Structures are given as structure tokens and as C-alpha cells.
Image (cartoon, rainbow, N blue to C red; front, side, top):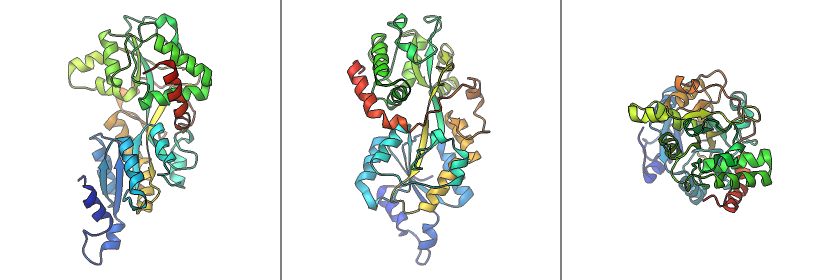
Length: 343
């Protein structure tokens, strides 16, 4: 799949690279995607869509916030049809910027769970990752079984975490605000800070490696990072992952916190029909299998199996809250983290 420069993409979008008399036909076979997903395995997903439909995909990749700002600056002149990004909190940011238009699709309603769809149909979650607890069993023989328990003083000096500004942590606290309320969410953040083994640093893989090395005893990370380590061809990497123990949090209560990789149709999409067709494709069986096998993400459509390594982790109870609340509560979540001294 060729990635086009902005001028070339604009030219393709305007039909300037086709022979006279064929512009309308070319318009019908084009889809322009702005994507914040950077996984090589997605190439097969895009190629499969083109093979099934004949619609040529032109793709621009970038970081989430940069793509959102680009869409804002391009305004009505944007060639983008679809925005794909990771985490419901970022999808909410794009929604708040007025970048999505509502979509009515019976296919999407029937195949995607209500909890993974923005209530007005402005964006949709197509793959899922769970944010779980990892422990070093040698350091923590009695691991926490809930997110709330991470604030227990018995884990003082044992907890490693990412920065509070990391979108995954913002969404986690946003969900806790929804379930437990502002005061309890703040008390939790303060308790976790008191239990830090070190200042927040690094990404999810950094946290898992720190637990495996014994630098700390407990962390939280997304499942797809963990499975990526397990599936590594490097014995040192896969071996380190096997040193940690995964704990599914809150199984006696609301269930494990999950987040999504999702997409929506851009408000001024020049190829709206193709864009909706692409969203429906992402909810189809073949795309759902690509998500599972390509990037170790959970399919969101019932009846589609995850890859063997994911399935081996178990079949957890999942928090049924609508993921759109992660964005709605995001500003408050950041304020509470700041108040708690979580850098």
C-alpha cells in the first residue's frame, strides 16, 4: 500500500491523476484514511478491503494529536474520509473538535456491542485491549485483585506506573470516576502514588519488564503488549514475560477495564459511502481476525476467536460501561492525577 504525500493525496482525491472522462469513476473507488495506528500487520487489512471492494486506499499516518490538529486546520478542504486512532479518550478528543459525522448503519449496530460505540454513531470501536494487573510472584505472593487494591498500603514501594498523562491511564481513572465517584478516585490516585517504587516513566512494555526484573512488584499494562512479548522470537524477551503473572482485576465486581482502537467518518468526507463501507468492513469477520492475529487485540464481534496466546490468558468478565465516558471524564481525571501528585 503506497503512502502518498499530502499534495499527491490531494491530487488523487480531486481526480487529477486519471484520464479525462474517468474522474467520476475514480472518485467512486477511492478512500482517504488518516491513521494513528502504526502496525505493519494492518497492511493486510487494508489490502483485503481493496481486494474485496476495488476501492483504493490512500493513507496518511501520524501521531494521534497531530492528525487531529491537521484535520482541524484543513477544515472543509480536508481530503480525509476516515480517522482511525487508538483509545476512546482520543476518539472523544476528535469528537469534541467536531471532526466526526454521525453514521447510521444496521451492520454496525448489529455487530458491535453498544458499550463500544459512541451513542450518536460518531465513532466506533473495532478492536479491544484489556488493561490488567501484572505482578512478580516472588515479590508479591498475595497480589491485588482489583484496581482499587493498588492503593493498599501493603503494596508500598512495589508499584511501577506510566505517567498520568498517558492516555491509557487517563481512561482508566475516567472509568473509575464513573464507577466510584470523584472523591474515591482521588483517594485511589493518592494511594497509588504513595506506593510508587519509582517515579512514573516509560511505556507499558517498560512497566512489564521492570516487574519481570524485580525493579518493582506490580504494574498495570495492556494485554496486547504482554502477548507481543510472549510471542517474541527472542527467548530473553519471551522468557522475561513469563516471569510475571497476569491478574484479571475486578472479576467479582464490574469487570476488567477495556479500551478500543476505533474509527469514524470525517465530517467533510468526500467519499462518505466508501467510508461507511470501510467501517462495516472493519466489523466483518476477516478484519476482526486480522486485529486478533496481527496485533494481539481482542475481536469485538461475538463468535470471532482471539489468537491462541490471547485465548490462553482466560475469558474475563468485562466492564460494560460505555467507553465514551473515558473522554467525558478525561479532564477531571487529569485534574485528580495532578492533585494527587502523579507526574
